[in-house]
Image (cartoon, rainbow, N blue to C red):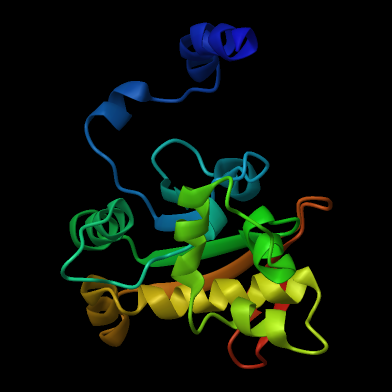
Length: 201
């Protein structure tokens, strides 16, 4: 914890040295994209993309899960998505999965999660039609990398159930992107709809 405190104390000077205009940032935000990814501490969106302050609006969830839109249930995820699209006017949404994902791994292994009931309930958002769940029952289940990729594509489908997203995708004002980040190599792969494959950027 002390290293975090020390760095926070030094931040104003580092920002000045890097010519980061904190005053300009105080006037408002105009991020380029909504970046949805896992809460995993090894996944750092600004490090991966090189984005500076104000460039990314971030939504982090366990397993980068996007709940299906539900008019009867208010969630922080839905509010963040709606705000990014309707108020901030982002033109791109990136859903980024990652290698060595504990959430997808738990689903593939059908881990006993009774000790973490809230996590178990959160992962139930992948049921009943998430391809990751389907992969668990397949005789020749795919490697975790393939499962992570399929999982990310499922989250894009769930994004499209959100009215603000669906409307802007339909009229061309919003583009959706599926990425996978390899923690051990740093390589980022993106889904290519024309081939159905994930290829390095």
